[in-house]
Image 1 (spheres, rainbow, N blue to C red):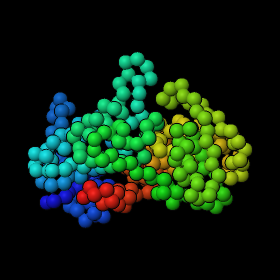
Image 2 (cartoon, one colour):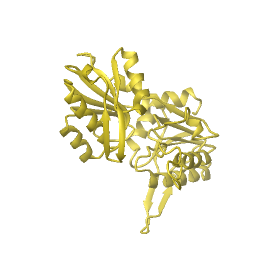
Image 3 (cartoon, helix red, strand yellow):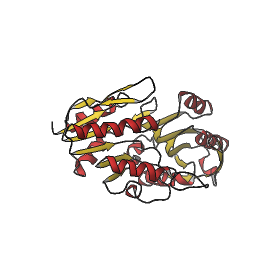
Image 4 (cartoon, rainbow, N blue to C red):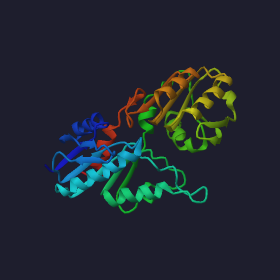
Length: 294
């Protein structure tokens, strides 16, 4: 076989969607755990180009399995091993904020570069670098934007206002609001802990009587969006919903967000879950072909 898409148990449905569009065979990487929790990985078929498909939510065990799978693919004759990781973990820590902290972006980026021949991801959580290749050096490191997909989910009835919950979300807010000709606002955030945030929203009165649509790259616990929803409701927003690329929230987190007035939460299928409304496979397929990776 020349090119094969390989998924894992948690990513097979998405891997198969990609394989169908590329007209490539798709196989599941076989994994199991020993009693001491070490993993055994087996590649079920040879390939000259092996495309490993896996999002890196809950990343630690997945990364080890990916590295073993890449090695096993090469042992079976792969000349190129490409990682398609729609959600790419460990990108937020791009510097040591306190003495002794590991710079995880640099560590994981170099680990990927050492074991794969190319990387394809969507909206990585980058703050202070302009290009993914700075984090993943020496190989083609391609970052796609989900903004067009998310924009296609927006109902423009009622002239909604696009809201960024913090300054880091400004790039996604602008890339969705501008093409649609919609108003946008960006809040300021102060974080006291992983689940303790406070927001201020200048010109919040502009949402009065209008739908408010929160836009961000990631929902982790949802606490930032909950605080934003409270602000928007207090300012008189007609309704509040959220559009995100990656939804990592638990069922309990999502239930709390809805209880706090989030009428709809929509995401891409980068991470499998109940909020999935936009399929990434067509864009991933297009990018693999445009960049000559298959």
